[in-house]
Image 1 (cartoon, helix red, strand yellow):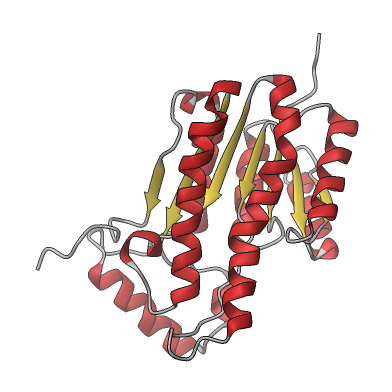
Image 2 (tube, rainbow, N blue to C red; image 1 turned 180 degrees about the horizontal axis):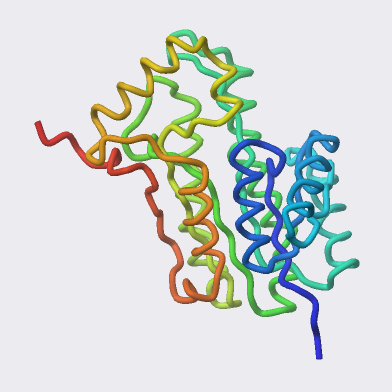
Length: 255
């Protein structure tokens, strides 16, 4: 009897959102691989999850824009566990710039990390999925994919990831692979808190809450719950969908 737990890769797993997603998947019984450029931070998250009673995640240092490094990671997962059940493409960057002031390298880097990275992960996982006849991808998009943003590169990349999700769902469905996306609104994480001063952050949070139907900000755990559901057998017939986790802010204004 095969007692190997299901395996889930979470990119950006050491971050404020990725670590919460990893924790929730661990609670659901997954063996999590924390794929992150910062190996030390990933090890710290893995240790904390283990101390809290979960199966200890594996920390793996990887640049998701490096196809060779991604291929090596997927191959090592295959050799160690013989399976790969879930990929959560959570790693991403946001270099703010309007279109008029857009540095070409900002556009290229945003697309490289936010779109090409997920493509590389999934591309190199296809042989495993074909062999095992199953798999699930959960891509982290953003409510900006549907509403647009003054940050043109970021919003464009998150729209692209939705197209990528739906295309994968159509292409890989016949081999048993599901692909879905979760689109959050602004999430208060340590990274986002470091990007601005406290006063501006609180002002921005108030603005978000004001135009959001539920009049509140979402938490990282809200995103993690949605990811865990889509990764689970409970969502076995859900594919090609975008789940908006943004307290209703994806809806058009009613006033």
